[in-house]
Length: 487
Image 1 (cartoon, one colour):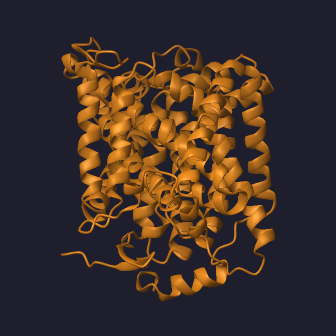
Image 2 (tube, helix red, strand yellow):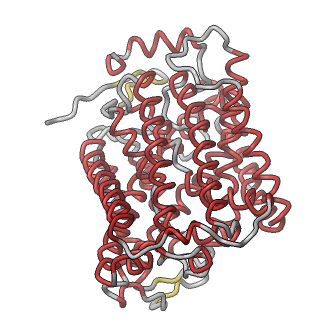
């Protein structure tokens, strides 16, 4: 069915707008796919090393899930109040100004979304290598002169995956939504079946849930960093709020449903891991081979191959969700004159931020070819927690600044739940800086490197930034009410 073309007037010119086609289940699928990716297939190994007791390990995942849900409810109110593309970029801009907003967008582009996409694409290539070892070969066959870039069979597979999903999401929400929902459905179904069979007929033992090991509170706090990294993506529906029908209702619903489903799956999946092997064995597993190794312990080698196939599907779903969500941040930045201007355009036929999607794909490809990918992701990993905390703090600012603004949804447990989220996130970030000071300082330097870029862009388009500032909530409500896609 051909897509209708909706236009709005911007600076006196007609401009094609994004298409409100996503329902609550579509947006929840984006949350689930964004969260359940490569992290759950290697982070439990790291958590087992930091919290070497079964109950401590499960407790960390439960605490992380509770924090993610509290954050999701805060984002739900913010997204209902500001149903615009961009997620926390919009919330930080309105609460703390364009500089803070730019830094979160800068980090998302430099390493947040792009780094995660690149890392997951390489991980997918490793799973493919289980069946076709030559395709996972990291030996370079071509070096880019004067640049630290190298191509290998492994990077070619990763680049091909990124390219295919980039093209898919450029071509519109229709095909992108279909593929995303199918991948998410297959992922959840396979996980539920795996966990159910694992507990009923798998060769595991409940004795693995007891251990003599001890653990300390600092270890639990440190373990929360990779756990929160694994939960990152619970806010994914907020990035596409401008493309969700009736966002005041459906974005909060999607965030609640998606985050709850992820927390339950993560707790059950970690329990299956512990059922399959003692926590000491879990802590010594090689990275990237967790779920298929667990399947081999429970069911034998053939099941390991089946789970490797599932790993490919699951990681592809996560990459797809990030390819969809990330460009909405750069699109919002470009509308404010703080990114490449072409990234603010919407494709006249497909109604997607095509250039923003392409820019993300290109930089992800550079990171794939770069040997510094793992360092870059580790340096900025804590920024995921940091900027999410600042975005939730924006809820308090906007509640005070705009007390009478219509709020279709109000965060559950306010002010305690979002307050605990902010405090816990601050403790996690401080603990990370104390325990891994050098890594955190380099990460802060990567974030701070965005400041000169911000000043350069803001100076060249200061008039555009001022004109793009968010109108009063009353004017915004009139505009949203006049948009037929919100009805």
